[in-house]
Length: 167
Image (tube, rainbow, N blue to C red):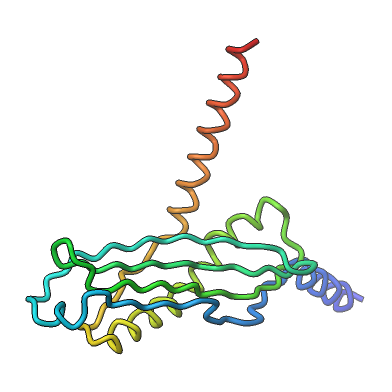
């Protein structure tokens, strides 16, 4: 009896939440070297800029696509040496999570899973483009998500204050 009760509790806990990676893939990719071959004759001391964003959408019940977009631009002075754009995507099944938990999972945890794949694609593109290897530093998606939440809360407060002033 006690064993049955323990098994039932264990099964209920396992059914409560489920996180499954269904697929990880490159959704879109672009690499440009607008100033080649002249750029290869210059001393290689680039200024590298990384732009990062992520988005997610529900594609079925408890199934979400998460897209991590990276744009890496390397410039020598005012000339663009290369521009690499990668959209690394994944399909994730998230069963049994509250709306409160879905936000951090989709906006932080899933991008953390996707980033190493995107980083590898960028490194390969840059090397195959004839440039020295580029290894992107790790990114703290938890901090980015917290920062985004804070900005949203400030905007909501400002909107509420503006609405109060009008009345």
